Length: 117
Image (cartoon, rainbow, N blue to C red; front, side, top):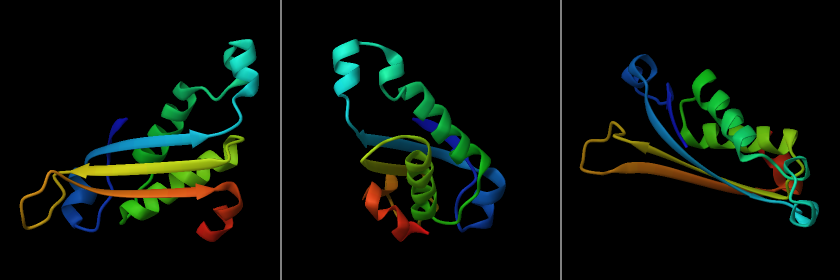
């Protein structure tokens, strides 16, 4: 997923914004969906897309770690998932040097969500 957001430490990032690439991996019991082949028996990836879009575009964080953690917590609060991985890449980060992107990744199981409060 790719969104435009206003996250970062540098003042220009908060004013001009930038592109953020987000990957989300979910682990949950898919037994009902496998048997039924019906959308209501699974987690809609379109719904996940819109949830992530809302977090990235409507909030502001200094750190990618905080943004990733907020996406992860929001997914756990809304969906019956066991494990969530959130990976965020920030192309063209304002770093003095040559690089394509900076990236953070966080993986948590449901019982670990309290560690993020």
